[in-house]
Length: 326
Ligand SMILES: [Zn+2]
Image 1 (cartoon, protein in one colour):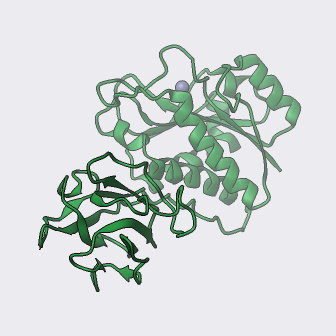
Image 2 (spheres, rainbow, N blue to C red):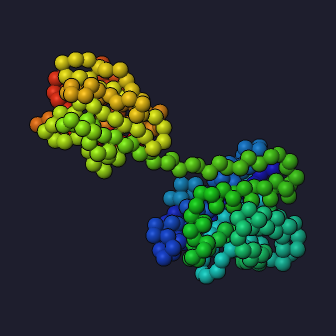
Image 3 (tube, helix red, strand yellow):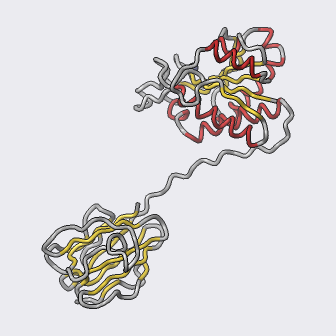
């Protein structure tokens, strides 16, 4: 049992791309085809089905069609599925087989199974099974079909086909249909859609000049007043916890505090060191030395590491701080 998967074209094939009107990056068709192809192979390999790719998986070359069909024939694959994205006006999904004989035989059956399963998964318009004189389905000796997975020049289709989630659905549809057709009764693991990391904000303020100064967020501003010593620090995250402590000038590192359960510092005592850590992302922070300049950003949390373990120079008063989560 072997399935040959073909991502149509190559990265640099002229003209094959999303229209700028709907995709300012003008994503190349091969990129979309290959993303689906890779996922199909991944799903099939996971359940022990062997796959080969007929295109150049780096996209660098648009392997000639006669090379692709020769490789498919030499591989003795059971099935060729060529993956494309459409253009020319229209919406939805369609799948091609070479001729009427194919359409009415086993090729037509599997083409329909693939087409309809992908339509079911994606909820796209079903444009049906069509006949097309394409080399990849004409010159391959095994069953072969070519699926067009949505339009690169359609206001509804294009934003969809660009998404990872859509590619997952298409790939799952193709793989599931292949398994159904060949009675492979292994559960197909859905491809998890990567969760976009949510941006974590840090909100913080200093005690300067006898009062708590206004809160600032991330690096939109700095907390403190240039020329006036900081003697207390308060900070919290929009999501997660931040732990921090300060060093008092001529004194010591004070106990660490978390979020706004307490503030760091002794009001009225100048600080010359700041250390911060977070349980949600890396804290990147820096301090401004009174009468001087900003020191480099640091990310560590270690009293002994004066390079990256804390922000500040022991003995030099801090008058402003900046914090962000990266
Ligand atoms: Zn194409």
